[in-house]
Length: 345
Image (cartoon, rainbow, N blue to C red; front, side):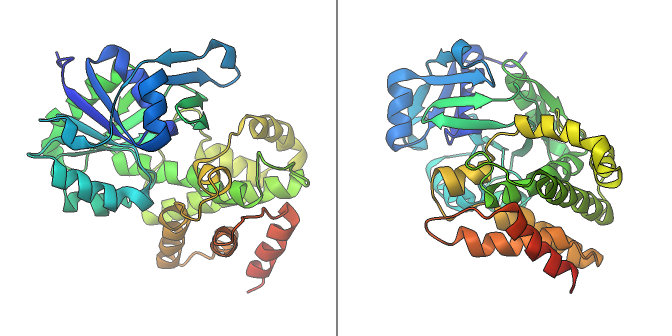
């Protein structure tokens, strides 16, 4: 039986860190959210409010302990890093300088860049794939599509005890799965993440989609190319929550449009603002996970000798457009013209 008095610090009170904090706090005595500024102040005053999609009127507000520096909590047992890849090195450096010993580190980033960064600072690392979508309505108020799952694993078999400890703590508050094939899970999730760039580029959820068929063609081919890249790299499919299977992705690309349009429209209506969209559109920033997700997959495609024109064109367009301030979304047809040019090369 895992003790409920383990000291747990969640670094980053965004959509993922915030929901996790709200779900773990009622079942664990010492959960602390680490953030600063308005977010920390809001949590300190009012707690974290979470609600399932379409059920805003049934939102729950959970009082959560907050800190502004990890040095405030001596002898931390578990540190959950819920920050983006582009902040990870800086955050890891600060945590390492402030924390003594070797706490368990739980890494919840998209992609696999964290597997290069974190071992420079820590020994006991558990990696997690986030199998649900969540979004910030405002600081400390978060919507989510489903309550999990988290898929946990480690790259080091000697950490099975630590993995079981984290699993037990997570399972008290949210659906959690442990896998012996974590890389399959990480790469399978990255395929889904490839679409974040495109939906951000066209301002999905901020402007009306003006050409449904082109939108569908681009998004589904991004995914299909992603499946081919992962297969060529040697990883296998791992089912993640309600996210589409490789068979579904392939079927949508291969079957006639009229067969799949209805189902795609329903799924499109369910799509929420992606984490990349939150970075570029909602927060009007210029930093995103574009390179650690789309850029990384293009490198894999180059190594495998795959053309992947959809992913190449989207990546280049995002590099160009995301650096502009203010960011202005493109239309689906403008994006398609760039893809068409890439195909002609």
